[in-house]
Amino acid sequence: QVQLVESGGGLVQAGGSLRLSCAASGLTFSTYAMGWFRQAPGKEREFVAAISWSGGSTRYLDSVKGRFTISRDSAKSTVYLQMNSLKPEDTAVYYCAADRGGGASKFDYSYEYWGQGTQVTVSS
Image 1: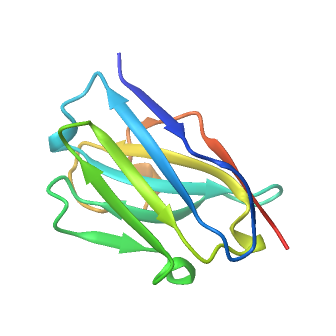
Image 2: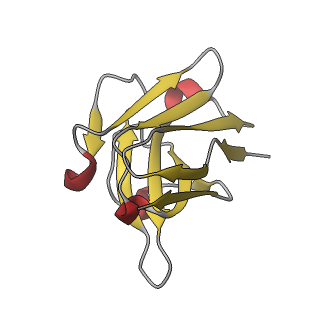
């Protein structure tokens, strides 16, 4: 049974930082691309960042480029999202997802498995 468990969310002031983690189990982590998506209240889910199976390719939402960094540790079957210079508009539930296709896709339909999400709230 595949499980993706996010952690690291919380309440932070604007300009602050958080690091999200997503621990994967039940799949061959090193062969999956991993992505982060978010959904704010009343809005559709949107792509945030993705990393290929090898870690050699990454992709970001334009509004987070230069502030967020996605990385992976295959030894720990974990993907991370380092979020710096947070803004109130980053407030959302953040989800990690796994894509057996291996590429750093920005499309949610590419991802077969999803976590339950972790709340990130940025106060102004």
